[in-house]
Image 1 (cartoon, rainbow over the protein chains, first blue to last red):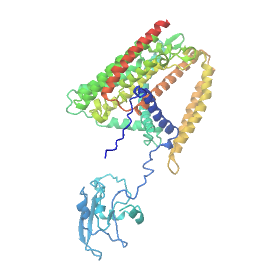
Image 2: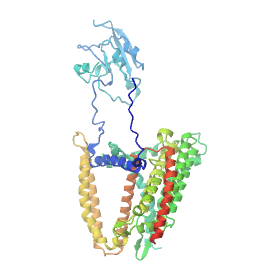
Image 3: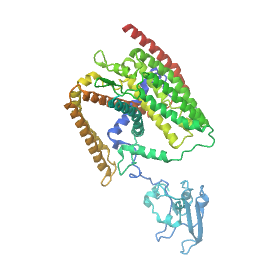
Image 4: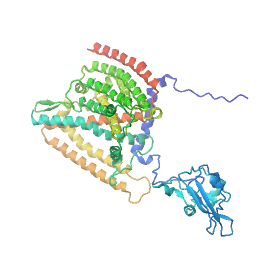
Length: 174
Length: 428
């Protein structure tokens, strides 16, 4: 079976193109069209007025992390260290402790994520056997003034709610 | 010298020195907002003083303040610190001084005495411009060499080779122009272009010398080191070229010099090929004798233009997203009031001209002001063309650039000289 060959049309060989000027003027007409349209009515600009108008975040977007909880508010995480082991950036550090309720044996006493180290690959979410860590907060802009505030503790991670409903999240393929 | 003589000398020197400087801000602003609009984005429109953004002009102030207060670094590896500091000054100085011979209005006649309207009363004209444009290459060479930096040296070599090879077609294009005009004085050239060809076409250089204009325009783009010939900066290959080692105010002076050069080369193109300060169909003498009807027409036209301009401001100076008590609407109203105030002042001035004796000193001064405005308007339009080209065309490769210069423009310019000379000899 011979490979399918598609011959591409080569541009730039004809005389009209070799003179340059005709093509240059055509290009300049195109750009001027854009300029003139935007000058007359700048509501036609394609760009988003970013800080005021926020982008729509799809469900599968890997935003900032959060820890999920059971209905009674206790943390789902059982401190199995799967996410910490799997993390290519090494940004997760868990300290396990004994669990008082009867759900499991262990629970995290400390659960730190260094967002300055994190590469937002989502491997922690993939690795988690209990769906305890998710990246569905929809937070895409993580900014602050000092390095310390980028290290999230267990309380911060538990506090943030998910941006999407459970149904939508499941549909997203997680 | 009477007091009037001294006053006019001061005025013309100040004009020649400060208008290019003021146009730096205008050029940078046009470049940024223009680039934004060409690419369907907004450009800088956030920096403000008490909520007034002046369509993005405030951004220039912010940038200027930033560059002014930044640390001025001269690295230890630079051996020739004197030349290192000298280089940006050469570029800036030559750019500003080369504007000195460009006439921005026709010779002003007051009380039987004529006052020339250009920075320095020199007859050198276009030669002065060539001399200084050639001299500004030394700034680039010195900057690249004294930086002791490979990128710097490469950038300055590219720029030097480019400017030198494009000076030849540029000079030859001007030679055929000199054959047509018969003078090197820019003011006389502009006066020549006030005539009419066949009685109805303005006798502008572009009509008489279309090929020469194209050659000169391309060469001027190359001389100012702007796209499509900005290989000297080639940020993808040689970082920033000759000014890679410069920071803070020394960089700012390079930057400003570049924009002054842009202004001056626009002014030269306007003077050589677009009639300079001449208003089409209205030569200086005609204007002086018809000063009153022209003033009256302007009095009628100004409010009409302002009405539409106000509508444009009101439409575009709003937030294009839901916002309570949009401050931009308030801002737009203030701008519109300012512009209406300006229009009222202009109307009063024009009305005063209607009151004065026709053909008198007032008419002469009015014509000069009108011509200055025409000149600046034309220059602004030419600068827009530069910006337009910059955001349309990609950069040439180095060999393509040299090929275009030596194998296309040079023969074309020579051919143009022959054709022009033949025409001039045949017609005279």
